[in-house]
Image (spheres, one colour):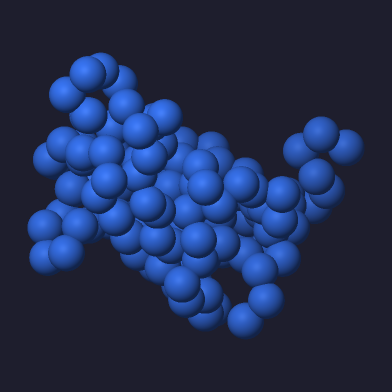
Length: 127
């Protein structure tokens, strides 16, 4: 399936799509030293959130999709060099509103979970 949204995303910052189907996506991110929050190699949570957000956007896969809200939990820390994968699934649609469940894992371990409320607008948010 072709990705028709968020086409200018830098995959080095938000991840590389692995699988995109209707209402579903998987996106992989290789965490880099430039993502570290401190000397221990802790990856700043904003990069994990960005990965999850991107996975949600391409699960909806509409040119005018935007994030309206997110209820998230950071469950475990991520270290520089870890490869993490976000899995997103559209759970419910009511009109323009889409609820997308996203989890981020490293191997078998779940690191992040969230419910993203996305809106599909009639025109681009900046139009």
